[in-house]
Figure 1 (cartoon, rainbow, N blue to C red):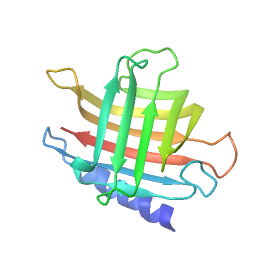
Figure 2 (spheres, rainbow, N blue to C red):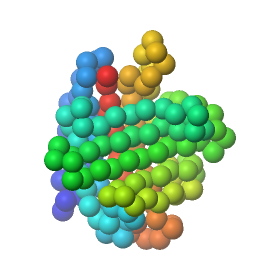
Figure 3 (tube, one colour):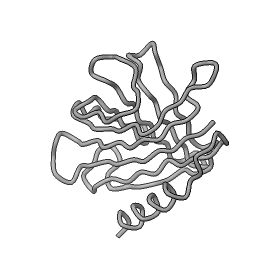
Length: 154
């Protein structure tokens, strides 16, 4: 039930978000009951100041997505990597390394999938716009899928 509501909310937010350079966005995620480290939990951060999207050229051009609840009690980080170490651009990436960290625990899925629907950089070379989705699994076991949808504008 929660997953259905989350999926519906993500669809509404994704289709209602204007395509502009104004600061806006959302970071919505959910997980199956046996997903590690999120263990069936879900969440969302829609105020833009509660999450960020950054690229780290010094760490194999990874993209790091970090969110924190307003009360600071919940924290989630996702790191996306290309296996070849090249810069992540628009497109779909299958069987790539994806790290999910929640409440201090993390797991690398070396067969993760992610899509970058849109990415743009500002004059300083920092990510200013990002739209994407992530799927992460724990040890390729059933009922361990973590999913996230991100829209970021700065």
